[in-house]
Image (tube, rainbow, N blue to C red):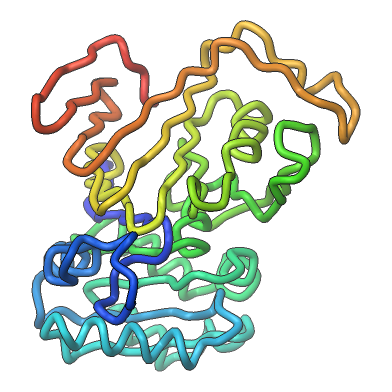
Length: 290
């Protein structure tokens, strides 16, 4: 049985209509990523649940999202700040999630999402609704990174392209064939995503720039949204990968790591293994994306 829901991973710093700088925005919030989240969820009458579990400042983050969704005409927005596993089993939370049209995970520490929600009844409800209904799972930064089965837990850029620079763990498993990283260009995370795909060469690395995301329909059709770029690392035809034989801290070597750079409106057909570039719509049939 195929997936019926929609997955929207976002690279962080999406336009909430409150930033002073317009460097990473699309002029107006009504044209941006959160507007697309609302449309995919059914419009301004949608029931949206924001989960700021990953954040160390959940009250501030929650208020920002309440204001942003309010500007888009959404009044049925709920905050579900889960800080332990018992709260993820709270009957009131479970009933709300059963009625919601969209759940949105905030940024912060992706490991907290897995620690407090992964494997709970709340997690099971989210997965079941995503698989069987027109349900939207959105997430920004940490909320995007937790979506994959193999999840990047951390890792700095000082040791980039050396073995051990990236820390991996189990994610929420919403999409099994991708590894997702966020703030990709601004924070220089090329090295850690390269090591991640070297460690898991059957998976595609997705590097999301800020104010940039993917709308993934039914686990297959994906469209780039936002003002930045999406970087794809495809390691499946690597001709050399010494990740398994070098010691921790040693430089790694990779050859034939395919890289694709996509922008707003570009589309991926995962099953047909095609990329369609917008606006010229050039089909590159030799591009492997799954």
